[in-house]
Image (cartoon, rainbow, N blue to C red; front, side, top):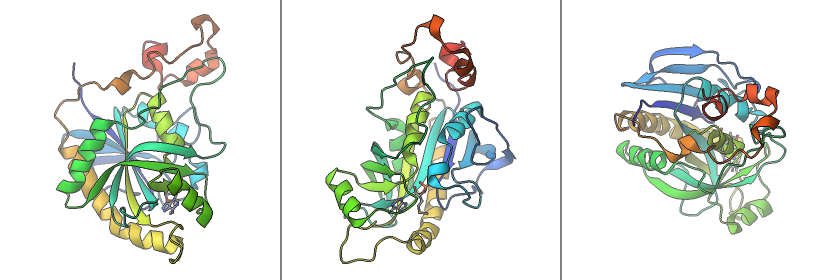
Length: 291
Ligand SMILES: CSC[C@H]1O[C@H](OP(=O)(O)O)[C@H](O)[C@@H]1O
Ligand SMILES: Nc1ncnc2[nH]cnc12
């Protein structure tokens, strides 16, 4: 069984537009989960449908802790996405990942606080596996696309998500290195968790902008430094995304992540909360309403 790709692209800091999208139209997609960061730019790259959403909104209006990741993921699902490639600016916690490097994330440490992190809850309890939180095939194709676009890429990284919006203290930065984190950011959690609950394979391409604060003899990260590096990184990100979409296999074969909810819901059917069920029409419609 194979189908068509509809690629959701979540643009992070510095990536608010995608000129390579043809037949383009910004479309408002509402969500019962809250306020979507912006309209979604719908169109295609080559023959592949794409849906682009700037995570912080055009003009970078939304702070990391206020991005409504549930609304964003739900809206991308409603817009027909089959898979998500997310892009994020990150600090490096690893000497071997310098500013300018593209880094594919494989694992996460979630150090955010108090953000709504699930579509499920009382009345419809579900536990999906997050053991392997990113999609291996999308990540590999994206890494290949970075190289085809002429840049260096590192794979298999661990991303720590902090609450922010402040950058970390030097002590925190050193601690996160001890925990085994390679890169640090403020947004990919709970985004990745929610993508999994919505049965959307998710890959995260990060672009290093700074060395955070752990290098004692250097100035710590600042917004000026991040913005200067973002300008250099964003062109590479756009080229990579275009290359990635253009070199996808013609037909989409199913991923196990398409069925992530199959064994996840534990609440007995006769105890399901009707209001929650209604809000889950896009995220879990396949399973709960046969949609
Ligand atoms: C502008 S530096 C901090 C900001 O950049 C990253 O955002 P994103 O992941 O959307 O690229 C980081 O997580 C912070 O939100
Ligand atoms: N050092 C850093 N910490 C958290 N988020 C970031 N985004 C870019 N650089 C960062």
